[in-house]
Image (cartoon, rainbow, N blue to C red):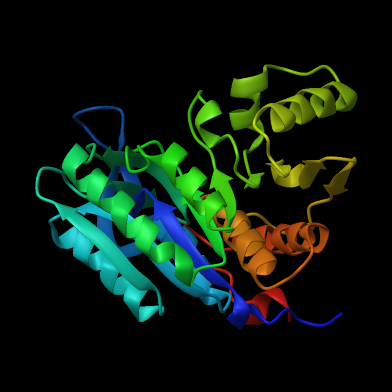
Length: 308
C-alpha cells in the first residue's frame, strides 16, 4: 500500500507544553536517614513533553507543524522552544513572567527504573491566554488539522471557542482529553481518551457490548465524528456512526508507555491531514504506538520507522 505523503499535512498544535527532565544514576544502598534508595547521579536528559511532544511527533512524521502555547519566562521554556525549532516546528510561545514552565523531573535508578517523579506547574495568567486566542485565529488558515492537547495545566481555558472557530474555518479538530468535564470538547471531530479517562466519564462497564453502548452514547452527546479509545496492550477501538473498528496491539516488548498517547494523536492527525481514511489512520496510529512504547521516555516515531 502506498506510503502517505505527509508533507501535505499542516498541523496546528495547541495545549500544555512541559519539559520532561530525567536524572539517571546508580542505586546501591539505602539511605541511613530514611528507608529510601540513595541515587548516585550520573547524567541528565531533557525532552519535549506534553503538547510539545505532540508537535515534535508530527514533525518527525513529516508534517508541517506549528505549536501555540504558554510557558514561563525562563530557561525551561526556552529549552522546549529550541528543541522544537531544531525539529522543524514553527514555535509560537507566550512567555508569562508570573509562572514557571511546567516540568516533570523523573529520577531513574539502575536500568530504567523510575524511583520518583517531581512535578512543577502553575496556571498561566488570563491576559496571556486571551492573547493566545487571537494567535489561534490567525494561525487557522495555514493548517488543515488542529490538535488540542489538554493536560489540565490551564493552557486551554478557551478550548470551547477554539473548537468553534476551527470548525467554522473548516478544520478537522482532534482532542486529547483530560479531567471530568468533557462537555467543553463538544463539536470536535475525534477524541482520543484512554481506558482510565473514559471510565472516569462513563463509569465502569460489564461487557464489551456495554462499553460500546456507553462510548457511542458519549460520542453522540458530544457530537463527535469518532471516539478513539486507546486500550494499551489490548490495542484501540474506534467508535463512529455506523460501526466499531477494533485494532489489536502489535506484540512488542514494552519499555515505557509515557508519551504513547501523544504519539497516537500526532500520527492520527498527520495521516488524516495527508488524506488517509480514518480507518487506515487508526491502524497506522496503532503501529506508531507499538513502536513508541519500545523507547524510553517521551520519544517521537519517525516516518522511516513507521513505514519501514
